[in-house]
Image 1 (cartoon, rainbow, N blue to C red):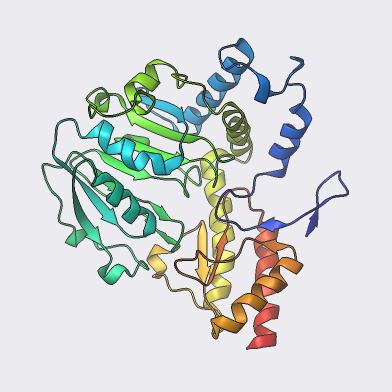
Image 2 (image 1 turned 30 degrees about the vertical axis):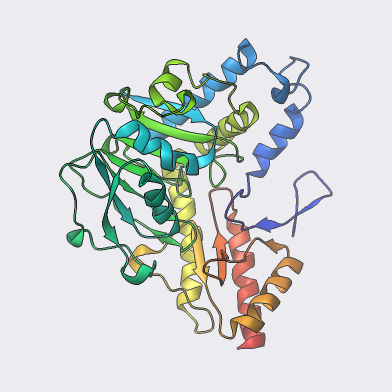
Amino acid sequence: MYDAKGSSMKRVFNFAAGPATLAQSVLEQVRDELLDWRGTGMSVMEMSHRDKPFMSIAAEAEKDLRELLSVPANYKVLFLQGGATTQFAAVPMNLLRGKPGADYVVNGSWGKKAAKEAAKYCKVNVAGRCADEKYNHIPDPGGWKLDPGAAYLHYTPNETIEGVEFHFVPESNVPLVADFSSAFLSGPVDVSKFGLIYAGAQKNAGPSGITFVIVRDDLLGQVHPALPSVFDYKQVAEAGSMLNTPPTFSWYVAGLVFKWIKGVGGLAGMAQINERKAKLLYDYLDSQGFYKNPVAKDARSRMNVVFTMPDAEVNDAEFLKGAKAAGLDGLKGHRSVGGMRASIYNAMPEAGVRALVDYMKDFARRKG
């Protein structure tokens, strides 16, 4: 555990995959503004989304997000409810535009779920997949079987569960769609290469409850007839993401996170920090034999570092118990794959990664 600055409280290093750790300075600002936002005499949670105070919060958050990602003028930036999983259905219902199907690359659990959901609304062509569902690498793009008539190509840049990340942007002759949830704002992205980007906030960009959609203008307006209005990107854009009451408090906190990222050097600075943290942990994993990382080196995630130990039935429980006692929380791997997972998102300080490596070294000495 570590001392929160200016406070007697102890905070753990939270390695959970999401909802995830937030920057302490952001939490402190939320605390300081919780009862009275800038002299309004009310919390942001109590504000009407139609009144000037919240409208200013919303506008500033969108402005900062556009600046961080250098979003081109011909893209809409939407702040939605429902989580990224809702977009598994909303994407095909918005983007098919009369075409029968779409291409999906499946390199992990979330890509698989996205394809399964889309199959309710269109013909899904799994253009690339990991053989035998061994999600420890990126399927070779040279072997992808793309449909030239597809409405779009969907992929998941970072698979949170398996710790697999694309370190390149796939080439596509149709609009490229990406679920950036666990890599959002972790480094620079050329938005112009994409038709649509979506991401849940609760990994790198704020608390749960809000989802970001960045969509090119020409893809709007030809929706599935059964699409609910609140998920029609064109209608939401025309209403300034306020077709219905938006998740106001999550939007506000996300805006504070955007300013924090700008303060550490924007996405270029954020990328340097994240690469340093990931290198620290992977260098240790590669230097010893007790822990194993199953992911191909050219596909390792900077955000979610997975590892296993021998005799998992005995060691896993003891490792987690000792980690929690040492103030290292949220390290248990996803139930579908087991093992350990250290999610080292934007707000995880480098000191947290160093504390984890020190604990891992000590545990391996005692058990190895």
